[in-house]
Length: 79
Image (cartoon, rainbow, N blue to C red; front, side, top):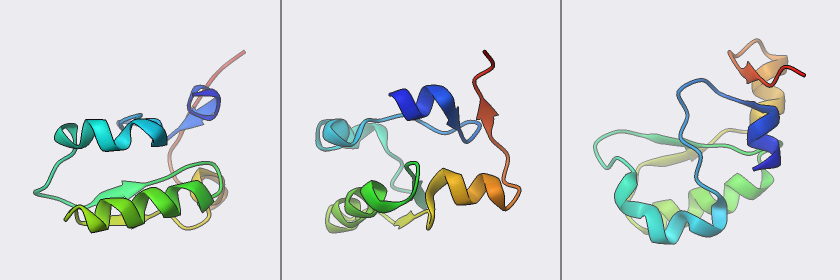
């Protein structure tokens, strides 16, 4: 939650990793799911889990940090 509150990709859906198994019905099965966290390590495990469940999923390598560095759009919490 803390990371999401700081910065996230616009229009992304926030699901904490420990809630993913109980919220699979909220995820689309008709398109690819890109999973991300701050640096890409925790989202790697979630991506693997989703693949095992039959989803078309990919991990955002380097996480939102690398995404932002490379110019990807983000929503940033203003203080």
